[in-house]
Length: 327
Image (cartoon, rainbow, N blue to C red; front, side, top):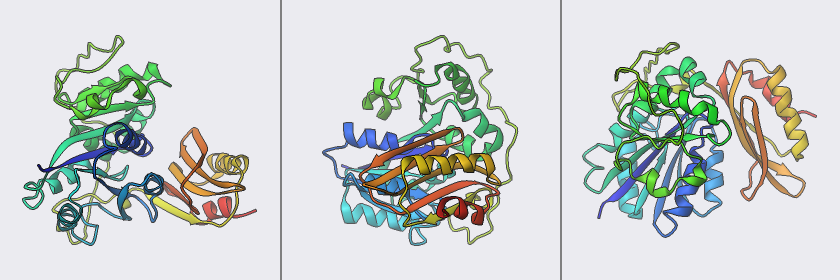
């Protein structure tokens, strides 16, 4: 029996790690699972959280997943298959990565005999999808166009956004199954069975979506060039469009202190922070920061760490270090 590969894609902060935790908890708990984690930056906060649950994680940082992992993703994936002989492999590309790159790599003759892609799932944040499409069209479009399952996140918080998000997704990919119920109401079987009947799982009036069946060219697309030794045959570096700042600190934070510093960053920092996450010390353990514009979440966590990672445009490294390392 061949190894099943599940690719979990989604733009910055959409909820990929939360979905992976759901899959591991509800479907793969008795399986041999390897997670290939590609975070954009020097550290992987998501990998630390998943490792704390006992999952075998292979991290790829600071680069394209197809050109990294010891310089040859095909060889490394083939080695993983023979070394671990896993039942499942979950690949989580960076939030600013391209799903098409992963699909192409997984179609290599060295991968197809022992493994096959079972599902390509893209998580879409209903609140922010239009903003991301307008500003980062190429990356966001690719993740939607190449998925066979679109799983909306934050639908319970923003039910009024579902209909517009569904129109947007359908304009880019008519064939994907769309799941829009709150995640606690969605079974893992629905998520992992992309061929179930290709109908949207929508429980409100957003089912009649007239759009002519053609992909629309959206505004805000960015030229996406890549001049490195292009062994994987594509152009893609997120590094050309996004900045990342990593801060390692031994500082002990309180939840209130960290929240105040993030709020200060929102109001005064130069550039545009699209995503921030990290694990830092608090008085009696560790806390996990998850930030999206307008959304600050700080919780206690079991994983240890001493790092914060910021992803955005035109970021000022010294300013961010001063905000989070200073008194």
